Length: 130
Image 1 (cartoon, helix red, strand yellow):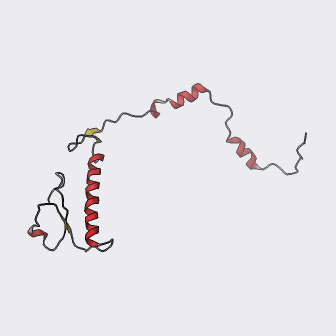
Image 2 (cartoon, rainbow, N blue to C red):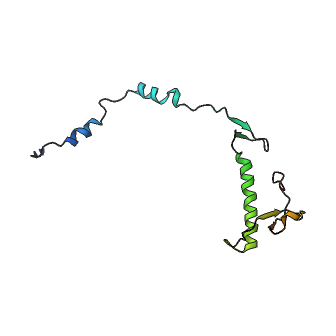
Image 3 (cartoon, rainbow, N blue to C red):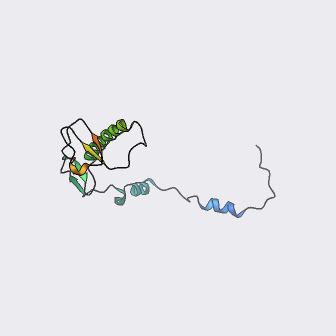
């Protein structure tokens, strides 16, 4: 067997610090189970669940319904796509307000001077004319 050559260096104060961070004994399985199954670590029941008045799916109170948000997101994508077609590319939009007109709608007098985006489909029930 090879023996360790003894060094003439004095022990550093860092050697004792590294040893202090090591646990003295192993935690038992009972203690570990108690720690893992602590009632404060269990999932809490949510009392702020509500039904969406528009679509009937479950949602948190004071938060948008995920399904309704997805519908709005898809409709916004359609409007942006139509604007892209009108402008022939990004960063070419005029600096005036835009008005979205669906099939069968006519521009109102207050829409004068605004950019009109026409979409050839029926207006969704949740998308108001205002």
